[in-house]
Image 1: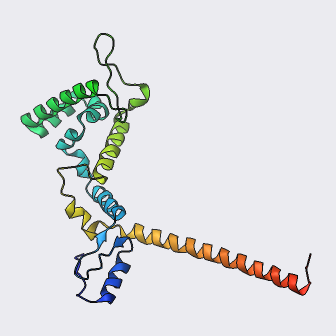
Image 2: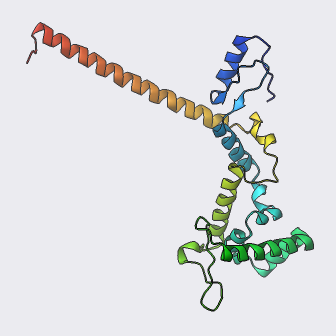
Image 3: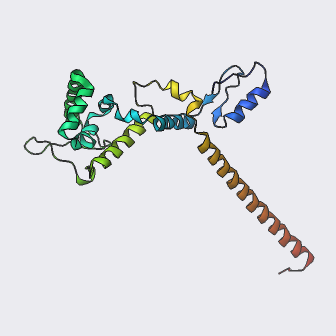
Length: 219
């Protein structure tokens, strides 16, 4: 849905836009589009991934975190699957992935990061030690679920430097209106319930005061 900026000097149009975008910040300049809130941007990015699941199967996505891919995805691949993946990447793509994975392992060993999902440590003879049991996915399906979650969080926070986020962040196409309407409805009911409780408490308080003044129940 295209956005048509309000006419200059039209306070009514600005107000209307504020109603259409309850979680946006209006700049005050009638000709300027609303500034989209960080929450709406993240929701649009998440919605984009929901509509484009092929993002997670891109051959280049491995380069986002070669070590993570190696331990969550590559370890469960059959020789046939690795061969098919190699054909998809091409010779140069496969070579690039292998080099980046080797460099990443050396860097992880030289500069351990406690915040990393997996740790790389050397044993007394210089060998790379195996992961802890809780770090190892139990099967291929779990490995993919963990990989997808990591890549989704990376995408939502803006970590994919090769992706043009502007086309998603500024597009109403990726607003999930159904979810937003449900959340707005739930918020309305919560507010109405809170208002009712407050009014009921005030009514009972006034009733007790009146009863005390008339001596009906003046303890």
